[in-house]
Image 1 (spheres, rainbow, N blue to C red):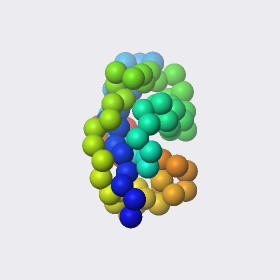
Image 2: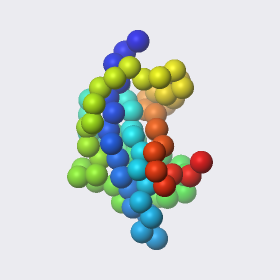
Image 3: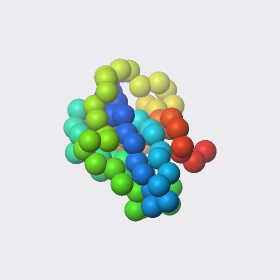
Image 4: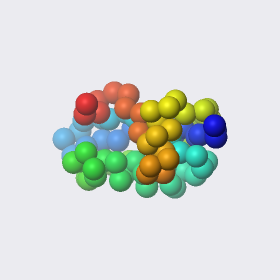
Length: 87
């Protein structure tokens, strides 16, 4: 299995709520991680949430678990929800 790169990400929505999640992708590319974070936020109905380079940082590299690997293979990235994210 390929090694994936994890970007620890925090986003703040228009109401001030903080969402903490990891963006996982096969390339070590902060710009792509931010693009994918914004894409996912739009998909969950939070297109105005703020995410930038200071709150989307490379954390570590690892082999992605099977459920995340499926997402990466399908869409190029995976989101691992941590705190404040919708179910």
